[in-house]
Length: 256
Image 1: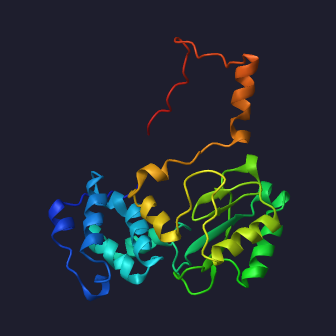
Image 2: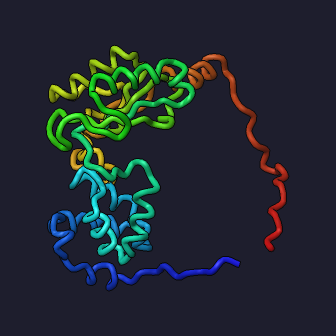
């Protein structure tokens, strides 16, 4: 039998018991105001932990010990609970990131079409490996490199992302030129999506803050390859049969 716990947190526990300790003083009143906005989105404060960790990364460029303490204070959680989440997801970085995060897909489809060669080319140029940074983290032109396990764009393989924006149908030479441009302080336009930001700016968006929403949604999110199947079906008049209203559904399993 699984033991049940009550995780309900009162508003007093969240919004009053948040002393500005020396460990979390790096997070100013503006960041604390953003944290309160995030918490207010959820009926249970602990549900705000994921965007809170992104908020921490938008400030420090990674999830530091101070960031874990800050989240724990704001959400009335233990640091162990926060650490368990921060160490589970690869999007939360435990070491300071560069100005740009370059994620190169080396999963099956991308690897078969050249993803490994792209990673090798970029790694040799930067002189770093997985989760390592070329340059001083946070400074202009610094780049953190990582393997990525599937970027959900197999129809456009091989792909890479810069700060989670897509660069499709890459070659080793194209990827190398892209990284060199980032090191020069340039921000090349992604294949899809909005204009390129930096890692901390992308993290602020993942925390749910879009300070310039108009430009954020300006870029196209669809690729020709992705839409081709739907276009072909429309041209040929192909449709899937609709589900009849009286279709018999399988019985629900009996609860024990």
